[in-house]
Amino acid sequence: MLSVRSLFQEILDNDESFRLFCSIAASGESQGGWENRRIAALVPHSQRDLAPKITRHGADEDKHGRIFHALMKKRGLAPVEVPPDTDYTMLLERHGIGLAHEKLKGAQPLTVQDIVTYLAHSRVTEQRAAEQMELLRRHFADHPDIGRAVRMISHDEDNHLAYCHEELLRFAYTGHGRAIQRTLRECALAEIRIYRDVSLAVMTHMGRALGWPKTRAAALAAGIHAVYAYERAVGWRRMVSLRMPEHRDALGGPASTAADYA
Image 1 (cartoon, one colour):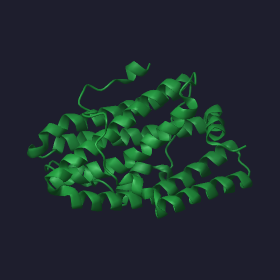
Image 2 (cartoon, one colour):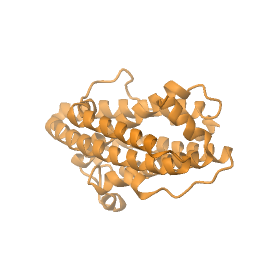
Image 3 (cartoon, helix red, strand yellow):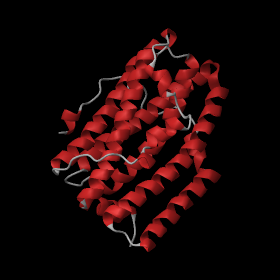
Image 4 (cartoon, one colour):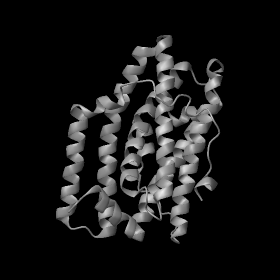
């Protein structure tokens, strides 16, 4: 029977599919680390109190990238080149979601509106990341090889999402509410489309590595399209709501390191 657990177990048990999965994940996390480091360096003077939290966010993303590399190394696997159609973070940037990399490569300080855009983009993408890691944690938290990594990354993603909620609400209280809601909606609708496309691409590449028959590939593609249809109709709304998190100041302390995972 096809299930999330059986599907991921199949990917986990095969070296080629596992290193593709880890390579894609590591690349995305490393890209997120770079983006956050640049944003922290360019934060406008009026928002300098945010810089340590943005830096912590980036450090967490870098740590996750190192963890995925460590999982491959543990099995004697080398990373593979990430297929362009599976590069979630770069596809988001190419479609104008978040802050343009050309801006982040420069030396000009960001504006307050740029920071609002960054937080709104992060609130949407961290929702996705937190949900994906919660799914893995539900099925693989006790797995002898990946359980500890899943638990640590899931905990971090929950913190990132809480941080985005809290900071966006702070900006909303100071008059940015309409801009936040507009940006959240634009980001959410674009993200669900890109997530669908990336999911289809990942399943295509995994199917080749695992030798899936056409019937299984078609069933998985149908499932991905069904999820997109739901998200396009109503599911996107969960990505734009804001509520004060129970865990306040989630990124206020020092980051854990990949050594803590090992």
